[in-house]
Image (tube, rainbow, N blue to C red):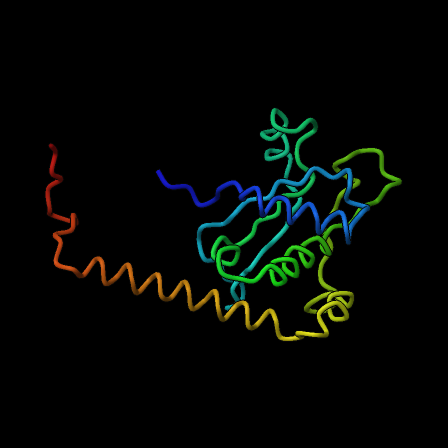
Amino acid sequence: MKLRFEEVSPECQTLVNDVRKKYFPELAQANIKVLFDLKKTSRRKRLVLGRIMSPNEFIRYLTIPEIDEGYDYVMILDKVGWEVLPREDMVRIIRHEFRHCYVDIEKEDRKQMYAIVDHDYQDFYEEIELNKDDPHWSSRAGTLIEDVYEQRKEDAKEKADDGTPKRGPGRPRTIK
């Protein structure tokens, strides 16, 4: 069985940790799980390059054996993006996702200390300033990743059309 998510590579985890340390020191104590999404995800007809969420009680409970008190955030990054985008674009994606994190240090309960905030508008004002050298990076990155997904889809279709019999409705399974 192939799962939709997988652990990120050590290089990706290092980059996430470096971005957190450099730009988000308030998240130093947050427990953050980072995963690759192996499936193309779109929202409002736009490719999702990354997302971050607060785990619900169930997910927090399931992650307690791995991390004491469970994870405070789960970040999910598009695997194709990691494979094809330059490092600077991955930094931008990770940094953008961390902008959604809010830490209320006055709360004593971890579940209430860490929260998610929405965009200032469609992005974050801080990111506009940091990306002024390449303001359209997100569109460029999305187009590149969309092209890779499309090419992989065409390659799979060509492979399926190579004349090899496929198992389908009415075709018995061959057992050897």
